[in-house]
Amino acid sequence: MKNVLFVLLLFVLAQLALAENTETYGWEGTQTILGNYGDIICTIDTDPIHGGSQSLKVVDDAASGTPQAYVAWVVGLSDGDQVTASFWRYDVTPAAAPSCRIWGGWNDDPGDIYNYGGSASGQSDYGPGTGWDLAEYTWTVEGGHTGLVIQVRTYSEAGDTVWVDDMTITAPEGAEIRTPDYDMALAPHTWAAIKATF
Ligand SMILES: [Ca+2]
Image 1 (cartoon, rainbow, N blue to C red):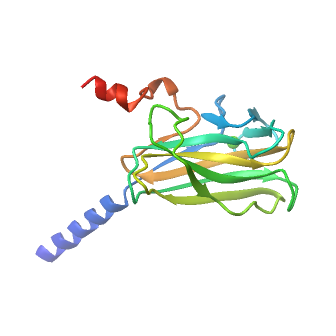
Image 2 (image 1 turned 120 degrees about the vertical axis):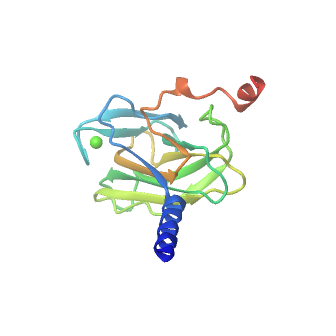
Image 3 (image 1 turned 90 degrees about the vertical axis):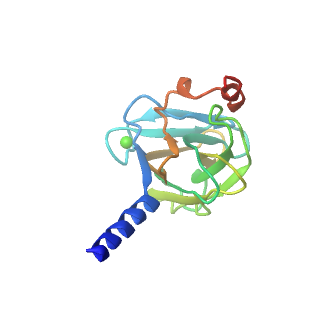
């Protein structure tokens, strides 16, 4: 009987250690992105779609650089935590722009998505450019960062367009995953402001 309890205890502990939080977003509503870097125009579109009846259309409106659409924001992280994100991307220009990659930026203020803590790097592969392709990356939190902004990073010239659909974000239990339907009014303004109230 003791052995059975021991095995059960190990099982429960293993489950706790593996506890994860997953959120998905398919752009089926009206919300597009949480923020952006550079000149980029994001709208809901109905063709092409990967799942459901809508996708996110991402149009580069910059003369140069790699504008980014912020499609998710994970807060409440600590060193060693792993975050995996994926979305389906669409372009039909093999080995040429437009392309996009899944990318990350560290963020250390759960009240301000524009608190930039440096690049968290991301996917190296631009995809085949033959239609829908799953873009995926796993980040391991380091350097004391507490948040990660997940981005569609575009490689193109003004007017170039890619589409994104069916995003999945997995983070440890206890971290908060914010997708484009997150109400920014719920985000505390700054940690300093929170601390000041105590
Ligand atoms: Ca969709």
